Length: 194
Image 1 (cartoon, rainbow, N blue to C red):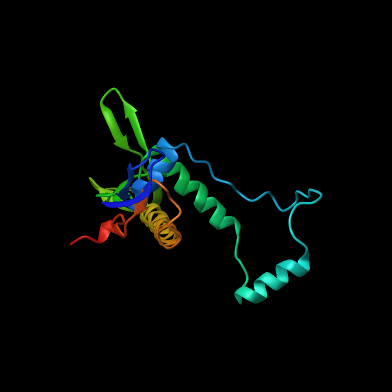
Image 2: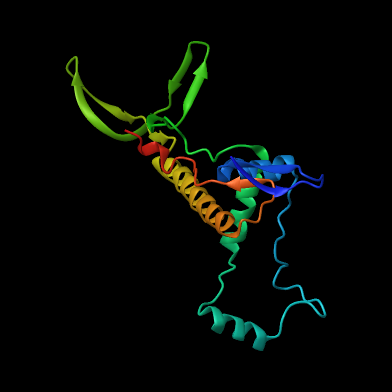
């Protein structure tokens, strides 16, 4: 723990709590009831709001780059805030493996059984007589589908990258009065543990 700042009472020293970025965001959104300040939609025009094009171009030239404030970053900011407010980590589907299961199951008084479809016919000779029999197959699928698992893990990875970006900004900016953000992070790609 580090001691920084002064309390309003004379001689009292305020202690900053040290938290990892996930815990710091949960503290901010759950305890302190922080709110996101999102930029207004692009189609909203308000007299006296914003800067002129010349000012924006001068600022970009000074920075040497264009600021990317795309929709994906706003969506990720909302997701990070909502997860922090709920005190949860994105579901990356731990321990889930795809299973081959029947596409459909019919139930009757004897229980459930997989439905079948006719995929062809075959002529067979039984008891000296030629008969046509249907060839049946059971349609199957993967549950959960491997793409669902991959998508959940990409979502976790995006969240982790956003947390890393926020962590770097909070450490560099030192803008929290009651909390010192540490370098601690949730596990990156926890599904890859050996």
